[in-house]
Length: 179
Ligand SMILES: [Zn+2]
Image (cartoon, rainbow, N blue to C red; front, side, top):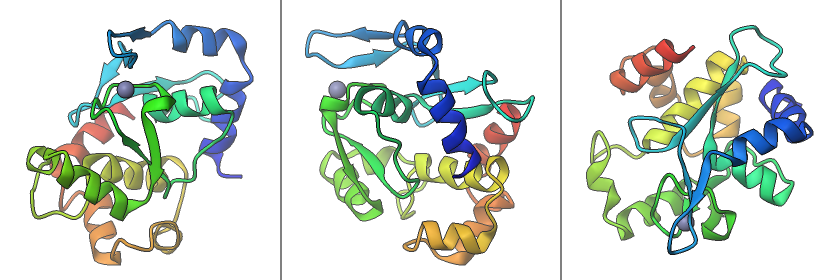
């Protein structure tokens, strides 16, 4: 089991931690559970956790992915993406989620018109996928080959450009800052 998965599992089994996580969610009029913690540049909720982490520096998680695990008891594979059907990126209500892959995410982004808000409209990746690649490589010790196996739709050159900070520079810098 990858370290990030082990870490998340330990957190899910920690009732105090789960309670504290849930205290950061506030239900709005339409039933979405809005995250009131840190937000990344793409507008997704992020949480940095040292508790139960095998490294003293801790690890970053997406709030909606943690919420999904708390609410369903399942841990998603990195290639399984959460598509927000409510189009509210801070929403952590699994009732609003559909699980898809990279291509579903592209369709979702196009349909909701959100692709225009991404850093580079021509890019095939969303900001959360770039974060994911950086996390898998730097936090979880994936090799480039393992990343390609995990994300078969993403080209090797695209992955190496991201992990060496040649593209998506602002996300790369933000990621290094939060380490
Ligand atoms: Zn929602």
